[in-house]
Amino acid sequence: MQKQFIHAAIALIGFCSILWSAPTHAQRKPNIIYIYADDLGYGELGSYGQQKIRTPHLDQMAKEGMRFTQHYTSTPVCAPARAMLLTGKHGGHTYIRGNYELGEFADSLEGGQMPLPEGTFTVANMLKKAGYHTAIIGKWGLGMVNTTGEPQLHGFDYTYGYLDQKQAHNYYPTHLWENGRRVPLNNPEILVHTRLDSTKATDKDFDYFKGKDYAPAKMTEKALAYLDAHAGQPFFLYLPYTLPHLSLQAPDAYVKQYIGQFAERPYYGQKGYASTKYPLSTYAAMITYLDDQVGIILDKIKKLGLDENTLIFFSSDNGATFDVGGADRFFFNSNGGLRGAKTDLFEGGIREPLIARWPGKIASGKVSQHVSVQFDMLATLAELTKQPIPTTDGISFLPELLGDQKAQKQHPYLYFEFPENGGQLAIRMGNWKGVKREVRLHPENKWMLFDLANDKEENHDLADKHPELIQQFEAIVKKEHRNAHIRDWEFVNPKFNTRNLR
Image (cartoon, rainbow, N blue to C red; front, side):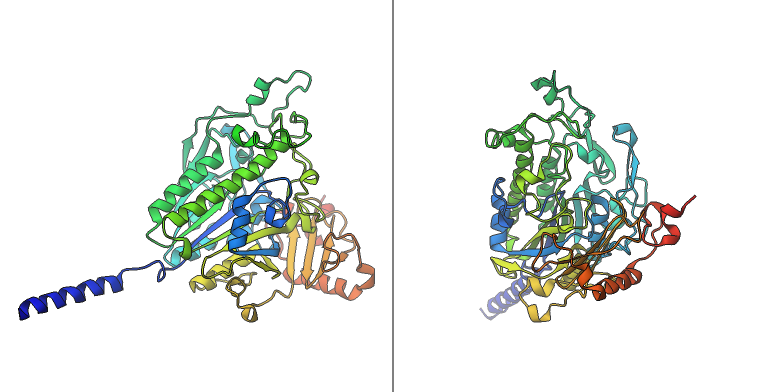
């Protein structure tokens, strides 16, 4: 009897020790999912004031988490925004500063963009060192296979999606890339910038721009499989969907949800990108489709029992697109009344939605006025995972997320530098915002100055009334700018300004 008791006690102790040593979701490092929209404007979600496009899942995510109202991209176009998000550098320090295109649109000429250099430290590198499995599923835009920019060389264990941004203009591509391998899709090759003759176009002509495998659907499919496979370990899933970047292409079932609600005429490709019979309905459908993908991911996290141990972010790489491709940002008030759009350093080009959700950690229904920027993400996740990082231009906003405003540090200013669209500079310091345009050809151009507290639309230039601020802006540019490594991106230093080249 005594032996039986001893054996039972030993077994109980062994069982308890197993329970004690077994990792639980509460003890485990938090999973991190960062969902990145493409060309989604500040005002294109219901929670940010959108009236015509339905986004119920993202609106619910905002109700269950924190919605930021003064969050910025690092720069107003695709490739450099992604580089700065991942490396924690602003526009004056980053290696990638613009959409430097290589190759062409045809499959046979796919070349991608300028690649990240070897040894670049990224969010994925950091989290991998912290014990995370890492994945990117979506659009990369920072280097093709057989270059130093392959995502597998920059901390990602699993990769799937578009490597070349030009290929991403087409939502029905012939292929995507998985772990450096070209994976065929069930789509014919489409010359997506083909124009139609408006006097002869038929429904069949519009159908040329449709296929069977919709790339965002394949991304969600791979994301769900990834979550199933890695639910038992800490993971970082970077999900840069291509929606709603042009071309205007969406599954018919989603387009039909909007047909008849807007007064619209067919778009025949006269300003580039795919033609569509219902451009307004298709654009709205693309955002609603994106919203549904977010809902699918959130539902999967709940079903896997990971909800309370998963921090999920949603944001966009830059403001809504300019007047091309059949999109109409004015009709949808895509940038929420803010001045400018993609490629601008006015608020409409760089102020972005940011929603963060983490049940039990981030209070529900909160609206944050904290001024933050996407190059803060490296510092934020480093603090979350207690990882050391090299020098970064960012500041962690983890205290803001967790409700500890007293511990939250503030940026003395945000610095923006963008070599395209004439060469632009912008600085936000408190509620003051300085913008300088056409710097490449006219470095003598004056700063514009806006009081964002009273003029978020940037309509009233107050520069003449505050020369002391303009002096501070000039000093900040001298402090923050480092010469770019290629001529096309150097517009601040007159020595290398292309105006002076012979």
